[in-house]
Image (cartoon, rainbow, N blue to C red; front, side, top):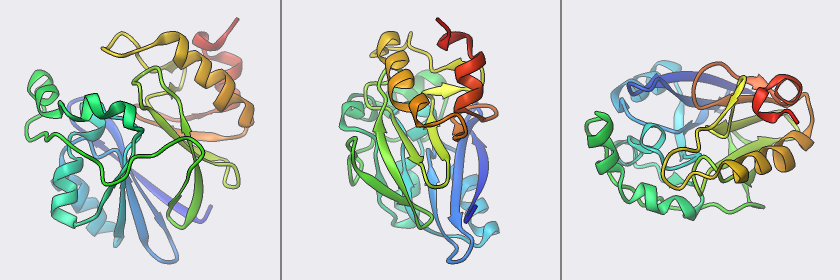
Length: 212
């Protein structure tokens, strides 16, 4: 695959912040900088990556809490998530206080994203899919050409995103997974927001939340 990726666990929630870059140009994207910004910056430097984009899948504290600080320190704009998560991004400082993540800042992205748009990650085109349920504005970024997706907290290995938080919707989440993600093909591998990744076929066949 022309893209390289490094997972950087951040925050007490061990969220999978992902640094993705083009190995030819060394231009890269940070996906979901939830916190621990000095650690993220150190990884960018160590890999020799030139950061060109900060990308969010959704607005929960462990995914977005460090985005404003990273933007300030790099001068790189923040893209995503869907505007429906503005209610979460407007209260990141409050979330940080509640969950013990210091330094979290409220955030207004430089660009909101909508389903049907396409974005570039490491020089490759990724489709934007709106998959609400875990949060109202959760987005999934998928490259059908590369057969890879970044799904945030929509889908996990053997599980799905929690929907017992404020603004969660279990039925909407299941519908998004079943109608938007799984039909893309069993062979699409995904990186999720916590823990190891998987592929859509494995989850279609064995994920207990997707059976019946």
